[in-house]
Image (cartoon, rainbow, N blue to C red):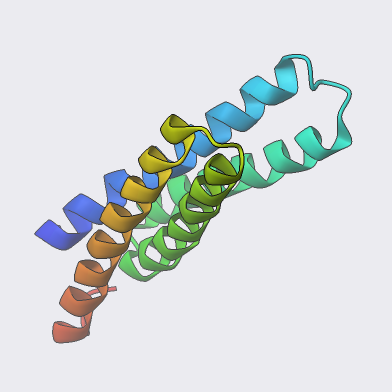
Length: 118
């Protein structure tokens, strides 16, 4: 596995895992009867499972697309943190979104230079 995939894969997994973990924690906590919490958890867990499947298949293309999706999720999390005036929920997600975007861009550029690698 090339360096770009070695960086993008764990970042994508970490991002999906954190998203899934927080949504499940919200679902199991006081929001257990909230249908919005249920929808958020179902989508977050689905993304996490999809990332795990992409890793199992060693699909760089799938990791790239899922990395893009998780970059957008992290960016939206940063916006939500900014609207809540919570610096820890703003800067962390934005920084992670930038790091993930750079890793995915590197993965896509690396994949473009070697089209035999899927």
